[in-house]
Image 1 (tube, rainbow, N blue to C red):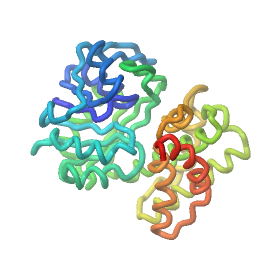
Image 2: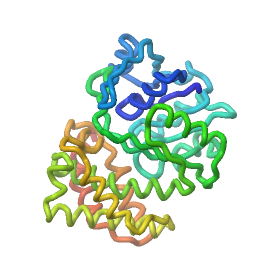
Image 3: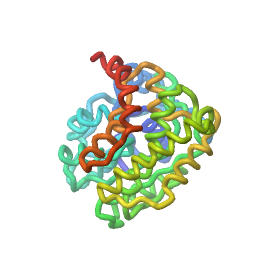
Image 4: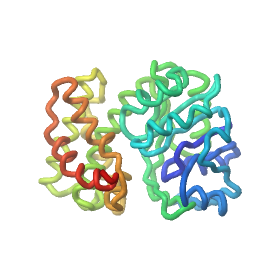
Length: 308
């Protein structure tokens, strides 16, 4: 397939590198020093499953130079979604599939109106990977799970093609008939990992067993589940237990990507991972005191990082 990766960071760089390694024509849409390093030295991936180098690597900051592709993969940070969607219009032809693997639950609502809802499928991924230095991706998790689905639950040829491509690179890949439930179930987990990791500045392994902290983690997960239910999203009855178990299994150094950005003083996905809970809760009259507390606590640093 001809693939454009919107964002070449930990997520887009890692999966894009694996797809390129398998012979797909992958172009990385990136910027700044990271783009320059990829263009000059290739994309280097350091992974627990084995290191590799994509050289030469196709990379640009101008999607118009690429033209229409078979698959557009949105892997950029959520606060860049709107500008990225506008820039990606040059990549979309009549048969193009657009898939977001971003965090949060509203990517389709933001990208679809710009690129055309008929092009959209939705997805979620579980991965711990980051840019270690310009042109270098560091993948540290022993998990690399991808779940994708059509918004109407059908299993289509385009969905199967994307599934097969991810399966080929070794990712644990699934097709879901209810992808919105998958996105919200992930939010139950990732909001807690991102929120409490950013507050404590510790890996999951260092705070998950503290009784007082664990009570608040569970409370946030219940809030997120309640908001999902109010929006008629059906989650598994044991979503809280599964989410806690995922945190409990995390390795000793694993941190959520939002936490890494907060610690580095960069803009973060605070609005998409924490703020969205309170915002969507208020739409349905669901109280979200823990989410609101975390959001208010982290917002000043996020505003400072954005220069606001």
